[in-house]
Length: 171
Image 1 (cartoon, helix red, strand yellow):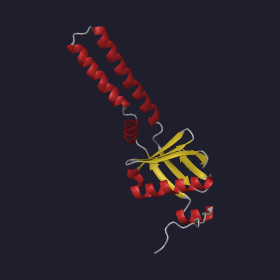
Image 2 (spheres, helix red, strand yellow; image 1 turned 45 degrees about the vertical axis):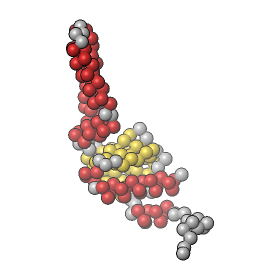
Image 3 (cartoon, one colour; image 1 turned 30 degrees about the vertical axis):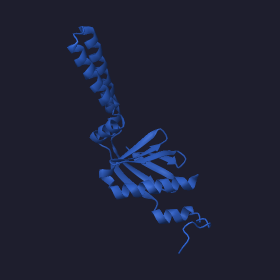
Image 4 (tube, one colour; image 1 turned 180 degrees about the vertical axis):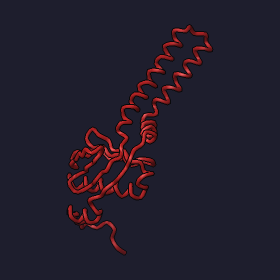
């Protein structure tokens, strides 16, 4: 019966072996649409929906209790302000919804969007998350949001593992 808890450590992978194992460099073409951006924001910031429901409940309760118009007007004004801020945020971020090409190699991640190329070394790649709809990579203060519908779940899992393994080699 083999001993699964061996005292012999596993050999460390060298960067060239990792590149061969994971077929680096890897190119990813993606395009985040405004609708997908809206879904991403609503998934992350569902407090807007919660806040709106709370304001509607307060306004209905105030109407039922016979409150004066000033309280209703204030609640309605706050609710409109939240929707305007959300709409402005979505409008500003919609300029970000352009086709992009991301290349993952041993030096880091390079992204080309609108003819501009930015390169992030592995030290600048802060966080990578994979959920049921999106693969998101935080590159400094910038987020790359890649819809799984465009690249497929298996490829997204492979990309996630490649980035995690490459980051582990750098530190």
